[in-house]
Image (cartoon, rainbow, N blue to C red):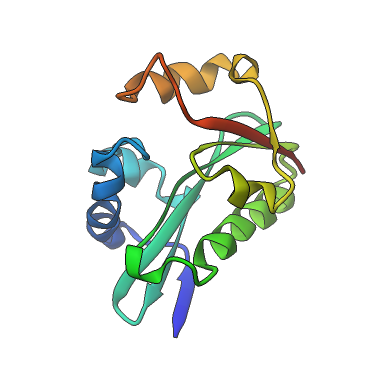
Length: 152
């Protein structure tokens, strides 16, 4: 039975192992243990018994803008709706926090469009995002991800 919950610091090692292949292929930014520890409250994990099968983060930039990031589901669990449940949990939390917009940079455009995210020009992404995260990406400055936003 799948269990969704907020992780603890003990989960960081499992999270880093799960995401490593996506980091290696450039789909997700690398985050070191310290960075994950300082943002642990932004994550939600899903376990199947004692096996971590997915996680996501809702990162708050401003009182207006948040970002869904680091969405990953273990290969053998994909296609079961886990990613969608993780996305919905971020949307629900953003509503609870009264965030106005949720940004996502992704290669999974159709998945996010199911939640009414709309494609936007990358030029409209706030500088705080670019200089905090994008600059660390191995694809920077030539980004091939799709940027989408949801008005909450």
